[in-house]
Length: 625
Image: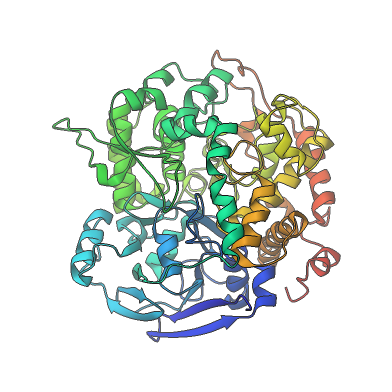
C-alpha cells in the first residue's frame, strides 16, 4: 500500500480547515519533518512576505516514523519565515506532542492568514476545528495546559502553544509543549503569536504501526545490545545535556561573558553532576524513549521557587543565563530557565541577548533603564527575562534580539554581538571546534549546533564505536579540533547532510546519529525500511538531507540572502581572554574564507553568490524552485 501524507490546511483569516493528501512520490522526496515543512512553506509563501504578517506561512510537520514505539522518534518541526533573521526559520521539539499529533491523524499542518481574534486548533482523530482562545490570551504556559485539559475534559491531550512572549511578538519566542519542551530557535513562537494562534491541541486513539512489523521488532529487540556497546548513553541519561558543561569548560570551549572567554571559574557549581546532587527531582522522557535525558528540578526557597512543571535547565540554558552572564548560582539559573519556559522564549537567544546587553552597558553603550544588569547578577537576569517577555522598558528593545538592538546603538554595539544572520550563536565555540563555525555561517536558518557532527568526534579512538559509525559516512582522518582543512570541511558537509536527514525523519539526534548516539547510520536505514516499507539506502537518506539544505538555501536566495550573510561575527576573530586552555585563540578570516569556498564547491553553490546553482537544483529534483 502506498505511503501518503495527510496535510491539514488551516486558513486563519477565513476560519476554515481543508485536508489534502501528498502522494507517495512526493512524500518520499520530502519524508516529513524539516524537509516536508520547508517544501510546504516554499509552495505557499509569497516572496517578500512579512514574517509577522498574514502572508507568512507556518507549518508543523512530523514524519512517517513519528509515534512508532521506539526511542528517539517523537520530534516535530516548525517552519516559517523567521522574524529573527528574515531567512527560512526551522526548529524541532520533542516530548509527547509530536507522537500524539501523528496519532491524531495528520502528518503536517499548514497555517495561513491571520485570525481576527485569538483561537486554538483542536485536532482529534483526523477531525479539526478552530475554537475561541480569548480566555487563554495573556496566560502563561502551565496555566494554559491546565485550562485546556479541563475545557476538553481529557488529561491526555497534548498542547503546543505560545506564552506571553509569542503574543507580544518577541522575535525569539518559542512554541512550547508540556510547558517545558520547545521549538526554540528562529522565533516560530512569534509567528504563531502574530497569527493569533494561541495553541494547537491534539489527541488520537489509533497509534501508527510500522509497515514491516517483524523487521521493526528485530530492531527494537537489539536495544539492550545497543546500550551495552555504548555505555555513554547511560551517562547521558543520568546527567542530561547539563553534564556537558564541565567537559566543555575543562577544554576551554565554554562560552563565558558574552563569548569573550572560554572557561568559567564557577562552572563546577552549575554543571550536570551538581544538579543531580542538589536540585534534580526526576528524569523525564519523550514518548517511548528509554534514555530519559530530560531534567526536572525543584527549588523550594521562599523567594526563589521553581515549579517542576517547567522542567529543568539544559546545557544551552545553563550557558546562556549562566556562564555567558557570569552567573554561577544553580538555583537562580533553574528559576531563569523556568521563567523562560513560562513565558515561552528560546533560552539561547534570550540569554545571549542579555549577555550582550550586560557587556554593552558595561562599556557605556546601553542604558538598561533600571534593570541593574551586571556580570554575575542572576537576579538581574531574571528581571530581564520578564521585561523581555512583557516588552517592558529596555525589554522592548532586547525583545528584538541582540543584533537589531545593537543596530539602534551603533557600530561599537554591533561589534559586541555574536550572531549569524541575526540569530545568536549556540554554546559550542567555533574558536575551539572549527568546522562548527563554518556550519554556523552557511546554515540557512542561522547558527545551529545540531546541524552537523562536532569536531571532537574525529579524535575518537580508531577502534571506537564513534569511528566505526563515522566510517559509514566516509573516511575521515583524525583531525585536530582547530583544523579547518579541506578534509575537515568534507566531514562537516557530509555530516550536515546526515543531520539534515535526521531532522527530516523526525529523529532525535541524541538517540539516532552518526557517531556516539544509541543507534547509528546503519540502524537509521533499518528503521526507515521497517517503518515505511521503502527500500531506502544510506545514500538516499543523505540525498534527502542534501535536498532539504538546498531547498532552504533556495528560499533564502529568493529573499536575496546568500554569501554576504554566510559570515561569522567579528568577536570570533579576536583572541579569547581569560586563563583557560583557549586563552588567546581566535579564528582567522583567511582560513574561514578558504573553508567557505570549499564548502560551496561540495554543496553545489555559486562561489560568487552562495546561491544553489541551477545544475544542483536540477540534480536534486528541485527545478520547480
